[in-house]
Length: 354
Image (tube, rainbow, N blue to C red; front, top):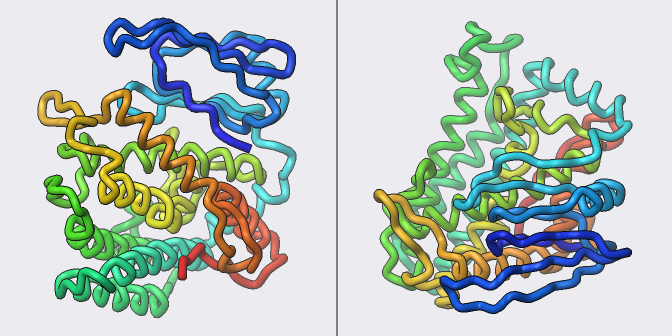
């Protein structure tokens, strides 16, 4: 299965039998001629609309019927909404999810697993990269991440919850855990810029808005990853808006954000390093406006190609032991979480790269 990205402005997608037909108009800005692309419907499990494209009603209905979903992003790649055919029939799984969310020690125990997976993967990437770099700062930040992993493993959860439920992070185990996660992010991104082989400035993680090209790539990649995890948790039958590490909020896909923590580095951070260090993306692939950066159209296509290639890369799954693509691993993590919540496995193992 694969994802169809609609990046060309004013494209029109219609259904023709078992095929999606994408009509792309001529573009006077880049001089490209009008063309038509045909895609077998059966190969599509997700459509990501990144420009002002139009999908006809028959095309939308056919995609929803085969349980593909459609994600809509603005021109900058920010997620705006999605269409899917419902949350499925897994009522017992959602009951278990809600019960675990309300059980404070159990909730924090799960949140700690997500954070542990994230810290482990960040540390592994720094250690791998530093085999050739041999930089003291990178080694020091990897050691900091190692210390934080031990602290997360030793986190004690007492009581039934924070003293002020309206401020769940204050004086609470959840707040302590999120503090560890923040310290880990600071250490990781302090060294991340040292892994880049092109002279791009990287002052650290800046999200809203991205103030440099590297942060623009990271933000775009995380948005794409979130779209895939939203699909995975809904496919398994979860409510994507009830999580454990991330507090609930209106329209906030907390569970998808939880699972994204352990997948950020193996998928997005690695792709960003690849496109920069192999000079696939170069300075002319960005445009700046009022101090914020975004990819140009050609730059976005190059990044999407590498992102899809990464999703389709097969690895040996660290928990199940058989080979699976990263795309499949997203769903497997959601299914592993479901098995834990339903009492079929004794613990939830985060996705940790070797």
